[in-house]
Amino acid sequence: MGRDRRKAGGWAWLLGVPALLWPVWALALDVSVLQSRDGGVQERFVEALRAELKPDVHLVHAGQSEYPDLLRLEQGALIVAVGAPAARQALEHAKRPVLAVMLSSASAHELRERFPEGRFTAIVLDQPPRRQLALVRELLPQARAVGVLLGPQTRPMREGFERSSSELGLELHFDEASDARGVVPALDRLLSRSDSILTVPDPQVFNAQTARSLLLTAYRAGRPLFAYSAAAVEAGALAAVFSAPEDIARQAAEWLEHPVADDLPQDATPRYYRLAINAQVARSLGIAVPDERRILQALRERGV
Image (cartoon, rainbow, N blue to C red):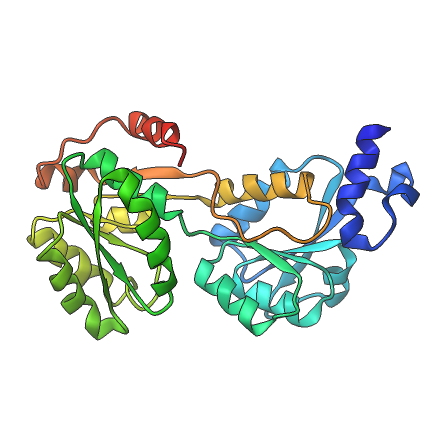
């Protein structure tokens, strides 16, 4: 019975019902799920979340953000919004607390500014700066200077990178591009004073229009470029740590099964992650890459 009371207390902040008045049969939880779109990585997230959850947590599908089923949206004790458009619709139309997933920290920040009274938290896709810099250190043990290319949305990340760099023995150089035309000039400035380049998920910096120029410019200069997605590594970046939809789903399931009792927690970075390395790029740049499992183990031993 003690375990049941702890769990009821954990959800009391959601339903506004005194925990001690909850009957045992009321401990099952309905969670409304609103997607930004069907298929793709969002469908993978939902299916993985369903597989990860314990039987007492039930998912209620509320459709897509373009045409949400408002009755189903309010049916759950809380809403899991998959993608920034779904989170925006949930905050506009529903009164339930929102857990936003599969979105960037920049998008989460924009939502918080747009809905200052909204009750929501997020598990963002952005990898912590320390984890990204630790990957540079593991793959390039002799590296000293890392160029970090920022954009308008990722400018606030600079402080986190600066805090993480000293313990890893890395000197950071920053440059910023305000739009696509400024990307290559900013990269050229960084290449002149950096051993490697690190890009972050800013749509003004790394997008379909700029990716090829970024990758080719760094490659021709003989500098490895670290990215933030498996797709970018496939396209020519040296390596990236990233979280797949299944990793975010695992973290979301843990959050749903062990909620906090009072205020919603702060936004969280991914707890689980994977590694992608482009072996062909590594060989072309003369970089000896250890086994991926060894690198992941080294990163986890660093506590990142």
